Image 1 (cartoon, protein in one colour):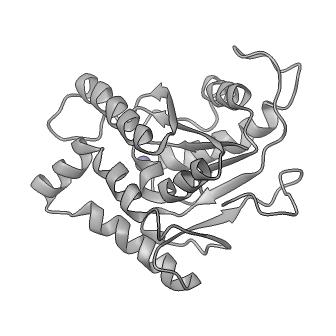
Image 2 (cartoon, protein in one colour; image 1 turned 90 degrees about the vertical axis):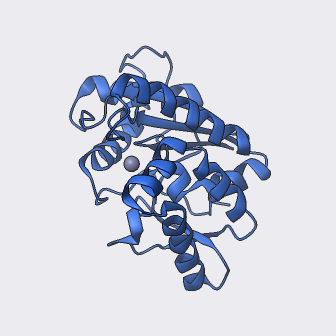
Length: 234
Ligand SMILES: [Zn+2]
């Protein structure tokens, strides 16, 4: 299968679905990660132009650890707009290029505007990408793709309906997260927040809910014709 994970920032997939994506690679799927925003405002001291380049590299390093291809729409932080057709077209092109069997993205009620905007862009783009006479930079069309929403940050207001056991992938997930040095190191040194512990705790909590050591939780986007009668997640 072809799997596409579309998150907002370069580290969002590591936080909420990297274990699942690693499992997809292990079962033979082609996995692509796309971060829509470039993360250029994610630091108090490093200037945006420099941080944009750093974070692109960090995301590449994380993806390489798991055999995942990483691409970006390179939109500036806080500028992602769910109603902007230029932004929709960028996502349509990623979908048409990768021909995914399913997409993982943010839930519509996650914690910050760029995440919510990405969720909207993906919902709209999955339909638009299927319309052959809707022309964008990438020719052709894609099937109307099933969407899975990954957990909200800290699991707030998110009740998973599907779980993926990532007990064997938790170490890899944490290694991938640590590739985001500008975020992890910065939070430890400046805010005294151990974000690794934060992420691992969330995975442990989802694991408790489904009887394994570590898990990631998802819900399926229930909209016709995006529903399939069989499990797509690993
Ligand atoms: Zn984010």
